[in-house]
Image 1 (cartoon, rainbow over the protein chains, first blue to last red):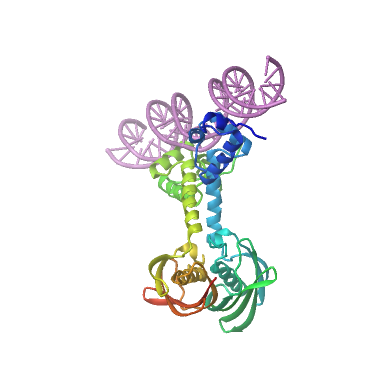
Image 2: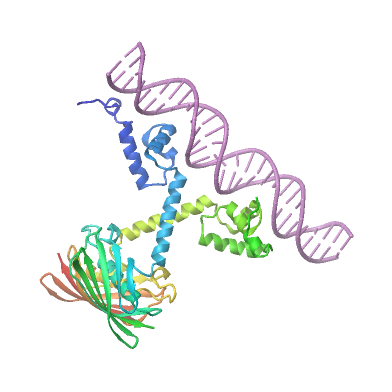
Length: 194
Length: 194
DNA sequence: CTAACAATTAGTACTAGGTACTAAATGTTA
DNA sequence: TAACATTTAGTACCTAGTACTAATTGTTAG
């Protein structure tokens, strides 16, 4: 079916509804700080059209969008700042063992290859090792680690920690990290309580 | 309608101007999302007083505050997302050595002790080691690391990496990290290019 | 005790950037 | 050309303010 769109007839100034709405969605995703007024200039339509579009697309007003960005980031900053443990602790037996799960995402990965950066895997393992130790604060003194297989963004990391030896204020903890049964990381930590 | 305000709870005594303004500043710093109206309830004063206070303190209105949080974090998120290297690369000789500087802050540290979390130091060292390798992408295969001394938030980490051996697609890189001449970390990385 | 002054409160007009709605104009297609 | 989709116009109303004037309290020095 061949259909002449208004765009063809009018010389590409105004877009058909569907296309305009798609572009609107994208524009606001990239820059949520645009007002309706600024959008009228971008799309050469009236402000009512912009508002109808937002209504149909379920896109909230400028102030709501800004607030969402602020709140999202605010909580994110706090959770990063407040996170003492990387990943979700699903099982813990103090002075013995523990399990933590970390859902990886593209923020943790190299842009080009989508491979999760090593220090994220390390951070999960290290913080789990620390959680297992029944001490107020533990410092990683020495770690011997090995990355067995690259992890792709989106894969779920399951880290298992086991306290293997305790000598004075030194704790020897082994952590093995898996993606679907397959081992991707191994770390041997010596933690020192202070 | 009768509402219990903080004033009531604190014995209904209203604070002197100076003290109220100090607390106002703190409150808004902790929670920039408070409206003037909510503040009137917290301090048991009229909305005009709150507005005079903000005027005198140079604190902008709610929407401006929210916008600032949104814009600040928006740019921050992007820069974190785009960062492939942790810390600032100040010197680099490919396939030989490199130096990177990382200014630590309280976000990187344990809340209680203000000691910088190990994985931040690790991340700087690992990414520097990778930068030194003249390959598109390198994966950390094995690392043997040691934390020598705890690092306090605010201290400047200077990491020096040196390629010590190269065998096939395996690179052996040593990284030493210092705070004011004093070594705080040592890492031996085996990187594998893919 | 009271005048002087600081601090607070009241009230008004105005603003941006909208929502929600009705109505009309214009475009498109059967 | 009628039916329908799409766009535009216009109105009342909203929030969370600014900016301003004026009145009312509270406090203190003489």
